[in-house]
Image (cartoon, rainbow, N blue to C red; front, side, top):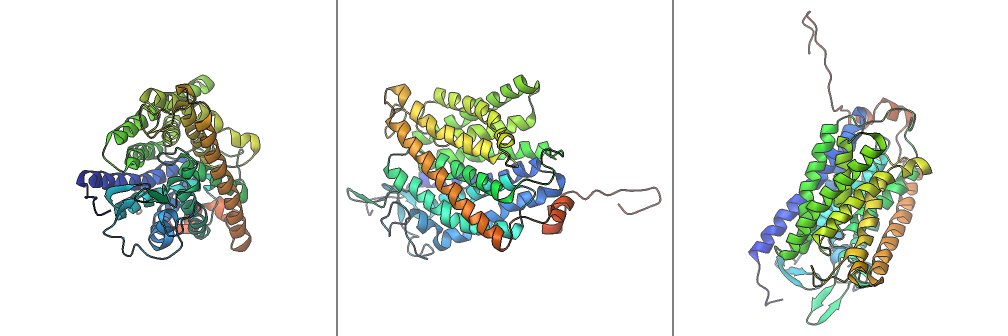
Length: 434
């Protein structure tokens, strides 16, 4: 450790990446907020904003230690304690090796992942969740689900000399997930499915029009997500190097491919290419390339994105066949896109672009990597779904998770926040107030 010298360039890149990832959560708030009806937009956006507050505080108290601490030497959790980063200020990052960036910078970067993951879940239960119950859910779910799963996937252990201890379960099994296809997207998608089941369908679902109230907000949110995702993926290199450049390029071209794939399906199926489809396709591509961005060549990233756009555009109809109300298609985009992206590494992964990568099926590596990716998909999806069902039902049966019928019909913004997104005033020639 004493031989490590702070790298100013890497540290600056990680600080910038951290800010980019933070921007994704307000971007998500715009994206989700535009997709709901006028009477729910503030509540939808506040579900993301409160997550930023709750998770940030928990991360300092015990979340980072639970996810990345070294004291437990366990594949299931990092450590249990309430250090509050005491004594870490001058330490360098040690995660499978020592990086020349301060551990507080790494902790801040990983915090932004911890924030956006539960925020993603909120889209599955739009229009019908009590705000206080949602806040309690975020605190419990982050503690019981996200922090441990982050350890399984992202913790590569404490390296001292030639010895590495405390590697996460899936990281130790050889899962390749560069920026969170399992820990973030499959995790959130499976949880979204569970909560949609717990809270049930919205009043009027499939009978009333529930079209997005503001497509410009949706497009703005998608643009902010796309922008911030460069920090999400390229920042996961923890350095300003060639791997960051690879992840950056793959993020761009995969997202572009997914937009084209989604719009192609829309054009064939409905005869129109829509702005909502373009925005949703972009997010689907971003989700799919997240685990693969540093392990595949750019040509493969295009293919992964194109398939993701097609696959997710078809998958959003799953909820109608199985009868669960996933309001904003968290399952169709994040769960399905995350599964495809994680498995795609088993097909397209190659050591040619990344020396630590393993060759997948298309590069002569056989099925070994695909099996490891499948294990990661299955373990995270199953744990998240089951744990979320338990947490969701516990909240529903105690303090209640869903608002009353009257509140849902009148508008959750007015009842939960005493505000409305749009104050529509009228004027008259008689001088009435505007």
